[in-house]
Image (cartoon, rainbow, N blue to C red; front, side, top):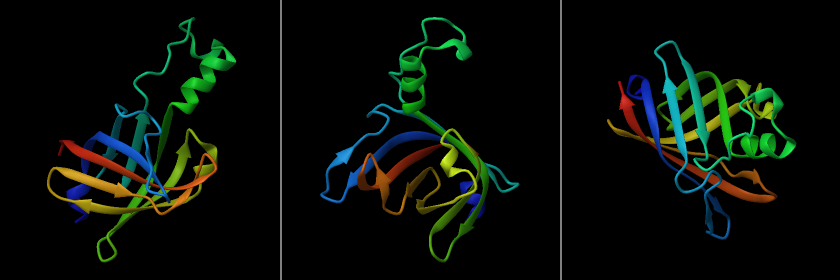
Length: 144
């Protein structure tokens, strides 16, 4: 099973489902993303809004507070090592680095459904924006 996740994956959809059933899209309905699992048990994931505003000055270190805030709030990126628990249908992400520093050093649990060309990852319930949500992320294989 682990060999089936190895490769590059392209984002299809990313949603949060609130406890009342309401669905929201934290990075918009047309979010863009990439997930890579390697044979050496490493992973890297990036998800971002397509409509993030560009900085007025083309210098990442000189953005305004508003530009930096919109950029940060419109993306998530993290990397580390992973393990596949086939019996429990889990992928365990050990986060080494993240755009959101609070994720660093944590283990992120993802329930998975996998076939040859698609991967669905679900989070356990967690707090986002002050409400309890479950995330569902759908990926399609970009390459093997």
